[in-house]
Length: 95
Image (cartoon, rainbow, N blue to C red; front, side, top):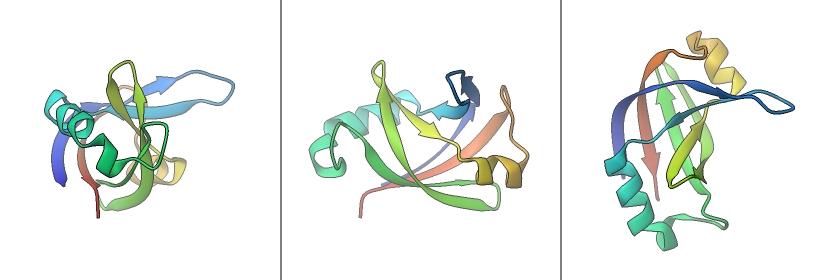
């Protein structure tokens, strides 16, 4: 399944900072409805993410009822993405 959406980048400030975007409601609904087909455990879902000209393999993580898309350092550097930026995300899950 494929989606394209805009989302705001936010930073989770732990021992090491991580940057994420949250998936929109329609994507969350699909992911929750098809979780058994998509997850490899603990609700984590493998995914391909493209922002701009950069595509990465990652895993969506459940948090507080929504799925978070982690933005790897290589992606953020290549696309010059920072906390608070609005980005257009292309997301693919499934086989």
